[in-house]
Length: 331
Figure 1 (cartoon, rainbow, N blue to C red):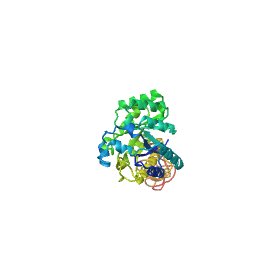
Figure 2 (cartoon, rainbow, N blue to C red):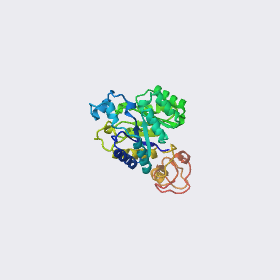
Figure 3 (cartoon, rainbow, N blue to C red):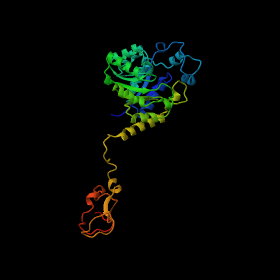
Figure 4 (cartoon, rainbow, N blue to C red):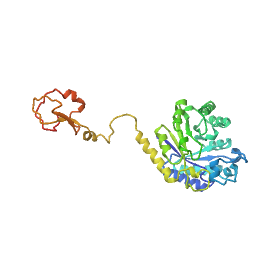
């Protein structure tokens, strides 16, 4: 089963339907499986006095509140319908992460089959219960959380009606960009072992190295923010991949999937012709007469490998030459 790659557009559309569609185009051209947005109503999400995160202050107008910043990035019901239809035209899955009850209901009404829970909602009991009650497929991000909090969220989702096998847990770090020393990618495997669930990775580091590493460690889903232009105004553009980088990430992941193989250690089809060339056979070290005893003085091993294998060395030693051999002739 191939890795499910989510190109995270998030709010990098800056509230523009036109930019949102361009982001969809970029995701399609990169070869992603899904493009994901964020669904929220600012009035339900944040108080009007809430401050922005430090990284948001650095990438947006420092004087505006978090409410004012988020309000500009809302997509209404009609915009969602429009984007879903456009995704169908472009043959890519539409996903969106809801941030409040109204948004959960909106996405359910629109027929989404997969619900993505953002990291900030992992400690929101009423929210988790509502999503769990829908009995849909769930992708749970776990930034800023402890292992116990991950377990508590899983329990709530399952107790509310979602099957455990329909949940994928994404290891994540909610810092934009995430310092390499804070990634702790091994925690993804800890989650898998502790809860026996499918796991993946939601990445906020710069570059694509960690995403590729996550695939080698068993990630079934990789999610990564991308933008049309890193210099655009907005909270997440700077920590996102540009279109060229997104294409490179998808290509690298697909190559790594091929490279991982099936785990069975046998010669591959491509290397089989080289067996004869690279391996060795038992050959005459010097001229040997018929009837001579074969010893370490008159036989040795050399390429090619189309004769008697050196692994039969002990069986050959002490036997009699059945005919005359020239130097380097296969025994």
